[in-house]
Structure formats: structure tokens, C-alpha cells
Image (cartoon, rainbow, N blue to C red):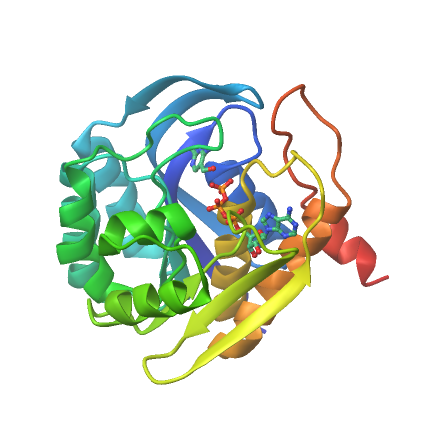
Length: 266
Ligand SMILES: Nc1ncnc2c1ncn2[C@@H]1O[C@H](COP(=O)(O)OP(=O)(O)OP(=O)(O)O)[C@@H](O)[C@H]1O
Ligand SMILES: Cc1ncc(CO)c(N)n1
């Protein structure tokens, strides 16, 4: 029986709630062997980000090469990429290695407001990385930044999804955490049709790393051979349990509970 392998190419969150830490915890909970390429180090806790230190390009390239020669991923995701040079390096290596099932989580701003992607890097992400993405998982502000349109209602979310699809993304998921509806609604566009998953919006400030965890769960599902619709459902169920059963850690935006999903299945 082969073990599915998933790779996260993302930043380190010293507080453990987002970034590669959230990704690896999620992979493990979904019984997928997790691997990581660190793009940046952040000094971070539940109150915010106190320092951002991008890795040297050589260090990122060497990490990717080590994975490529020995540990081919069945699926992978990108999180914090920080600048154009890192985006272009990752995109070029993706094309060289012909890795499939790429989930791009276009991380731009941390919950506390810190910039995790330099403004000039948005164009590189659109031009170099999005055409390689199987799934793109922007939150509403990220979708606005990538498309240049304001998103205040569901029709505008659909328009943004169409524009992102036209940039070469196979499946676009616009996450609803930043929305103002009573429920948390996530919208999936497959290039032709829309579908959505709806769950109770949980009244909590402890939503640090929800997007990382959601995209990591989708990545793990794809690594295990799930269809996009089943991966979308698994990601939604996983993050909903993680938020609903939060751990009350830290005095700011606390992390989610990465083992809640498995506990809910018992
Ligand atoms: N309060 C909430 N209650 C229920 N579901 C939520 C809540 N907040 C976010 N979600 C869900 O969490 C997932 C992530 O969406 P969100 O918009 O929070 O991502 P994000 O802003 O990229 O997160 P982060 O930047 O913290 O990683 C989505 O499935 C969304 O519906
Ligand atoms: C390292 C890292 N990646 C992503 C996010 C988004 O929450 C974060 N806060 N920190």
C-alpha cells in the first residue's frame, strides 16, 4: 500500500497556527506524509507578525531539488511566497519537475494586517504561478487584489472567479471567511459551473491560519486521489471542526484545532 505524499511550499509561522506548521499538522491528521520547503521565516504569534525574513533563493532551490530527486509529491500547495523572485523560482521548478495537483493559496496579508506578499509580486503570481494552479483558494481581499474588482456580494464573487479562471486556473475557490453573511459560504468555479458549500459562521476571533488549514486539507485530499468536489467538501468539514473546537491559545487571533476533525469522526 503506497503512502500519499504532500508538499507545502510556504512560510514558517513561529506561533504554529498558520504557514507550514498548519499545513504539516493538517497533512498528518489526514494521514498524508507531509514535506515542506520553507520560503520565509516569520516571527509571529496570535497578536501579529513581528518580523519577516525571506529565505535566500539558493536555500529554496536546494530544498526543492532534494524533494524532486527522492520524494515526488502526489499533491502540493503554495502559501506565503513573499516576493517575485521566490514566485518565479517556484514556478520554474514546478514546470521543470512537472508536479501535478498544485493548490495555490495566494497568501498576501496575515490576520493581524502584516504584509506577507510584496505589492510588486502580485503580477508575478498572476503571470507565472496561476497558469500552473489546479486549484486557487483566495479569500475575498486576495481575490480583489488579483482581479482588481471590488467584491461586495455573491455576483461580484462569481465575476472574480470567472476572471481568475481566465488566468489559467482550473478550479477557483473563493473563501467566505471575510464575508458579512450570517453563514460562511465558499464558492467553487470549475470554468463552467458554480457550486458552494455553506456552514454556520462561528462567532470567534480565533481564526488564525484558517486559509492555510483549508488549502492544506484540500491538498491532502488531492494527494489521496479525491475528486475536486470531494476535496472541497473535506477541506470545508476539516476547517469547520477546527474553528468550532478552538483551543483558546494566545491573547490575539488564536489558532484553530487541527485534531478536531478526526475527533469528530470517532
Ligand atoms: N468564523 C468562521 N466560521 C466558520 N467558518 C469560517 C469562519 N471564518 C472562516 N471560515 C472558513 O474558513 C476557511 C478559510 O477562509 P478565510 O476566508 O478565513 O481564509 P483566510 O482569510 O485566507 O485565512 P488566513 O489568512 O487566516 O489563513 C473557509 O472555508 C471559510 O468559510
Ligand atoms: C507564515 C504564514 N503564512 C500564512 C499566513 C496566513 O495566515 C500567516 N499568518 N503566516
